[in-house]
Image 1 (cartoon, rainbow, N blue to C red):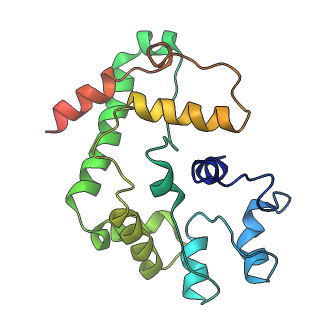
Image 2: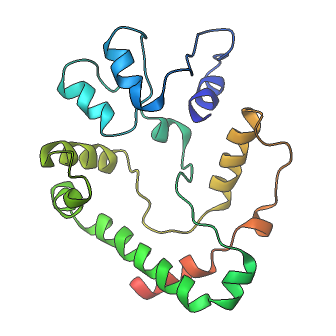
Length: 187
């Protein structure tokens, strides 16, 4: 959806101007690309870096950069849970903010070493390359505050793809109270 949204923003009609094969299992797209089944592929890491390392392709653009801040990761809870458990939600949010602070205050090499145990199948050099790419692209925000413009962008993308029939007001679905407190307590 993000890819098609970016294409449309740049005057390309995904249905008329090119052929997008969505029948390939997501875990097999890099192999299909390197096997000559496509001119381009959309890859998450570590597949994108693996293609470069193998000289089978190279990254030409970042959907994250070209789309703007799309909230790829968001945490949801029922209002009843938020109201009944504000301390748990705040502690969880504070912990996430500590991670955001760590990323902002450390080098890609330092970050890669810390996260490497979570990616046992990927060597440290590849993890460092990936983190460096994300660092240069300003992938990580400095806080967890879900801004209204990002919420609207997400709705624009969903609407453009035909997946959203009715927009929801930001104030009805998003609370930034916990993220704002987490930022204040971390600084």
